[in-house]
Length: 440
Length: 154
Image (cartoon, each protein chain N blue to C red):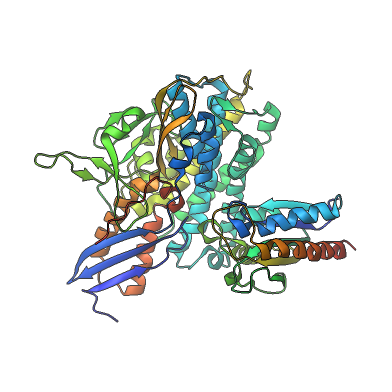
């Protein structure tokens, strides 16, 4: 075995993440000297594709950024366009959007908890291997995912890359009867979500906490999905339109994705930047009081407090959020009254609009500038994995230093597990416009 | 037609030859209409298991990336033994057709008869056109699959 005080840990291709990324850690004389979360999936140029297209095309084009969270892209884009055009969508259409988003949370969280992350905790190389010994839990997770898919298929027109969302609402809205058909699977899903949480709370979690600055949406009444002000655990509270005044993105040579950072000007260093955390941990910790009573109780039963700073507990928080999303979906289905029209009219006008919603992996910000004729003049999309890249590296830096006594194989395993705490979506993170390479 | 075997065409139409399975399935639908039950699937493991749940006879067609010459068509009987994951491209999170088959086998959710046709691709870049050898192979595969489905019905 190599000298544990000086070694390199390299994961050429991370498994069980969406997209192509790797990991490199350098340790010298018992100190971590470098950590790189490498994203080498090629840039995908979506912001360039959007220029010159009609403002109404943004939800369909941006849905193609990700096969796991297309609803998030649709929602942030329609909110941004409606903000630019001075339109507010409320009533049943707002509720249906929320229901659609619940479907995506359920399917995305169930996939990550059971198929992608649980094998790390139980010592299996993949869900396929794990299924031999935990068939009931895998079947349970797949059933949950199926219910999430059913919601997205009903409201979105199909499960992947939905096509029924438009600026102003939907192309078609469901009847009460169609929506009522979701009640039975959702009732089962509530039990399945509780069973999933009951399973994962028995896992062993590394003792590890970070002093993150959490950033998420917060709404006066609701657990946030598609509306709210952007807040942080250090007291920031801003409308989405001010996001870029407080946050920025930078390019690092080792990554094909821009990296988010919070502006933290200091005396002598006005351009200082610092990492922050978006995603389930941040959302939960800033909005515990907005969960349903049953979800709050389930969280307490799983050993979670109202604030969660251990990133390995993300699997617990995702399970709690899954339960919450099922309950919220049931509430919406029970109170649904079909709208008079599937959409409100939206007339373009010259202006800029920002939309911020909570994708399963965290805050997703879209900003568009549109011309008076409705063409898109500028587009900016800031997905959660981009925002979390610095936090991922900082987690690894601190996590590894306390575990340098572990052998290479165990430490590499735990590093991969630490990255998967974030459920990183590399395909989302490489959507951006310009790839700048700094040579030399 | 619920007693007819189910054909699942797998693939992504924005990734050139990755669409081979979907294109072949559409061709089969046209060849056997109205006798074929055909669905299309983007290829995630969960979606595939859901699609074939409760089906006694299933045929799946997907693009391969095994190193064989482009356009090679292979028939694999997945109900008889493990499927080599190296033959097929992974879907999102690396959970594609091969993982779906082995996961379903572990969960006792594998159809009693599951035949897979693979079409070797060469270009999986962005785009909607099939390469020439794959375009030809799609027709060959469609004929073979049609024979397979008709034989299964009989």
